[in-house]
Image (cartoon, rainbow, N blue to C red):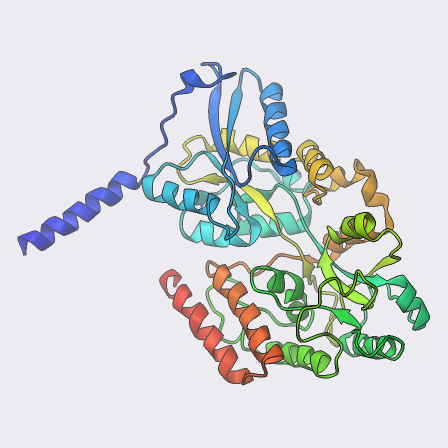
Length: 435
């Protein structure tokens, strides 16, 4: 009994040793730091000698110049590896040791999990006027339980790109953003395309790859059909992930596949080689097309929507954001840095160096590429219809199970109910600790 009590006390002491433990920095060795300045430490998820790393470095330098004598921001570059580790491993180790910096970068869909695990804390002193500078999707992404925890370094979007030559040959008229094709209408459009392309080709170039791509590209089919993945508090999937709306969405994908509107197996560069009329892809596609397929006649259309869509937000959004760690005792200063790093000037720098979409309205006005037809469309789609990915502490499991569900049911013809209920079990296993 004494051994048991001693063990419990030891665990308690170890836990208390972690709580409130703050990273100790020898600021005397830091070039540019003055003793009268407030020191702010930060980790970012990339290496320094990349376009993204250069953008972060430049923004930090400008912050330190602007707030010289008041704040000093010190950045450490910690790259992710191919499996997503590296940076994430460093965060996990920092959580366990109480050694996190003041500011960390967080991938947008993971903000809810970071909040639920007490890794980040609410930002301090972000006014309504401050918030109005950011896209609604950025504020929505960073807000959990009515508290703002993160501000985006950048935004992102996905488009339904099309081959203008094929569409013109098929006699198809592209709808406006506010009146997109319904699922039934899009199916009819694909039938028209199928009638004019070779039998070995497909109207749509699409797959359900593992990783984050599937939920990022194809969650809009759930949302525009009136469905969702989780409850508003992020803790319930039963009745959402397995709702009638989900079954309807899965069956629509099955209809497209069964009628050869897309290939069951991936065909490399199907769209780029002119063998399909449509492709769902990220904002990076236009630049790839321009560089590698200069004769390609590229256009962009609005995402198709459920037959009873009621103008709800539904298109893809989300990317890396800045947050203040729960270890920080300098929240006010750290928040000022977060506001700068996610602000207009930093957004312009990041977009110019990487091509990523900014998180603030005014940054778009300073970037000439967003006057281009396609980039302008992506911007407007993001502003008007952008929808953050599911906000839940079990987000990785939700993402994984959505991909698995579509692959198993649509591509491999497995039982719908059995597959979806299995997904519910897997997600619930993770959510159990948060209820």
